Amino acid sequence: MGTARSVRQALHSLCRVTGTNLDFLRASAFAVIHDAFLSIEMAFLGALGLASHDAVQRAMTFWPNPYGGLTAFGHALGASGLVQIAKAFHALMSPPWRQGGRG
Image 1: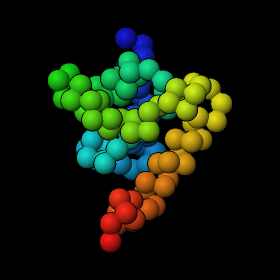
Image 2 (image 1 turned 135 degrees about the horizontal axis):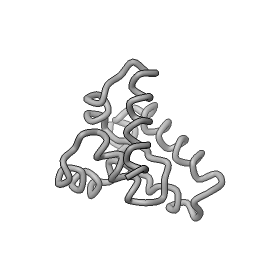
Image 3 (image 1 turned 90 degrees about the vertical axis):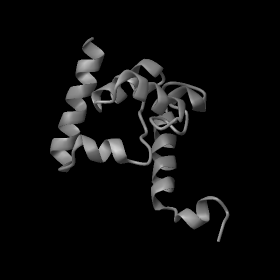
Image 4 (image 1 turned 180 degrees about the vertical axis):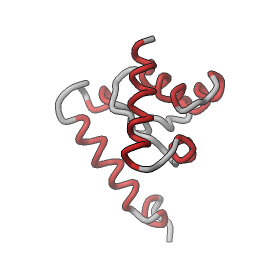
């Protein structure tokens, strides 16, 4: 229960600081959640206001962690977070026609 509350508070703080809202986050192409556990991803999706079924569907598409989370790079600590930041930066800065080799 405390984790879900903390995630919800962090999201609301993020929205306040960045001048965005949860609708913007829900409509984003992907999210990169810096955690190794599905429970944190589900808390994040719940904090976005998604119903349980919708949260599960979105998690199954790897929307909340398209690059696999912390353990995907061999360890839950260390430089794995930097790898996620670099991959998210690359995804945001690469034109779509260069990502899939088309064009």
